[in-house]
Image 1: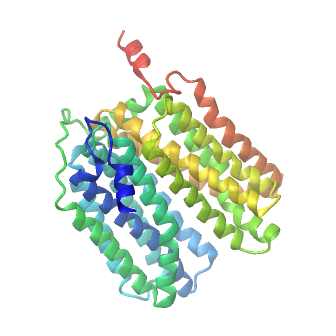
Image 2: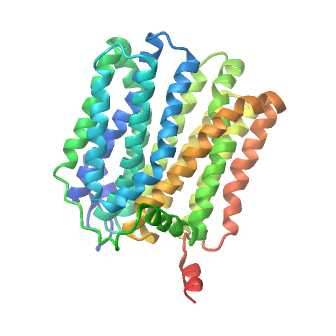
Image 3: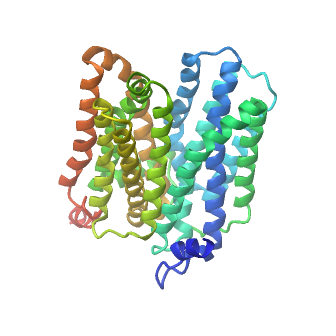
Length: 417
């Protein structure tokens, strides 16, 4: 089994060398895996702690709204400082801060307002850590190694999504939320320790300017590449019109149509299983038209509201969630790899933060509006709209120049003339 894994991630081309022998990538990837584990256990711990403190479902929802607020507030600043400072420094500082936040939870007896503050602080640290990770990932890998590196990142994320919540729930219910916070602290601390020996390649930065100017420079990198702007807008709209309604309505469909919560949990688990498969496929597959492959994978999310609008059977719903997970990770890997290829390394974190900001704004808006919209036009109509948007919005981006190949060279040449 070990030899098969090494064979899968080993050959990356003569210029790239085997990924398994890239020491800096191993340290970075293992650190990211530990941070994902902490990120997945943390919300389960906070949820049970809030309920133990007498909170309700509305209390839990309000607490986790603080994460989205933090991402919106800090996303652009996180990208800015990840481009100004060594990315390793930003990640170490973020994980150290998250360790301190988790340590506060160890005190026990935390109130709802304190839990909301902890969620806000962890979300703020996440806004700094993720852009720095994506930019550092690009710097420690050769171009030939980047697809496998991005795919392994996707694998870590999906494994965390499958294992983390269940592990967190077991730890917290078997012992207490304090032990859950201890597990979160341990995961973040391991992620920090793994980063300490990492030797990040030096990225030559341009002349420093004001924060506003440098943020504007990051936005200009997005605007001057139509395919980058098109994908960011498409993902944001899909988050609002397709993904958010599906997230809200899946548990209701599970209870009303299939008689319980089992279909809800199984569908989410199978989404991650499909994503895991998509990450493994992306380690080897190098499509000739990466933009077409990515957009098609993203458009598959339209299957989810379609399945919820017409839930003919559990198996149909489950199959759609597997297909969507597969498509999402194929999209994610192609998106990350081609951003790393096209965006100057000294501006990559800022571009990543713009992507995060757009999604972070539209997701809570979609979650908030789903209930009133379903009451106004009916759940089936809302899900049909979500399905149409899920398919049509990504596919419409194929009309943009350079989209099928994720190539902005023609636009750059035109702008220089």
